[in-house]
Image: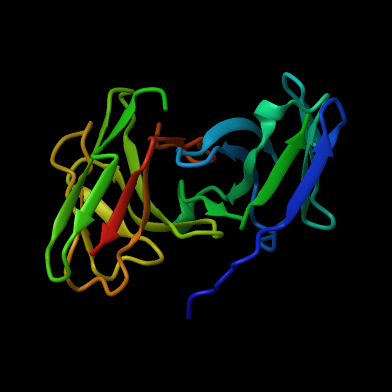
Length: 115
Length: 113
């Protein structure tokens, strides 16, 4: 049956603080992970990705950490700004087979940045 | 939104009607995807296509149909068989390789009256 998730996890921070958004995954075969940002009424926007042969990857003001042992992914946003307020999704995929190119999305986390 | 367009932005449908949502990309991507998003939930895959004239069912294909006659176009038809079609529909495309980033369009919000 369908899962129903009416209450997304939320994170509220002050402008200038660092934010950490977490994501757990269950498929041990997943080997590629992406973080997306979705603003209200818009499509998801690519932020950063990481492959399973890496533990950490940095972008502009963002860092993704991957812990394959506990199947955990995190997104760190430095010096959070009001424009960072959005819903953040992690997505995972694995190469080959029937899951070729197919992403599995997490439920999402609402980030609210207060001025 | 980078090269992926969806139309219309808002769509209203009466019960019993079929409607078609447009998705076009000029990124020369081989693969295209349709997702459905309900309030407070993540994205669920409806259909995907890795190559022209071929497509596969996703997790929630019932009540939907697609075609892929051209590389740049992947229209989605929401049929009257879809019991709860009111949702936000997102189209995406990717190069079609494994471990591939998908890029999303701006979405179409469908409301059944």
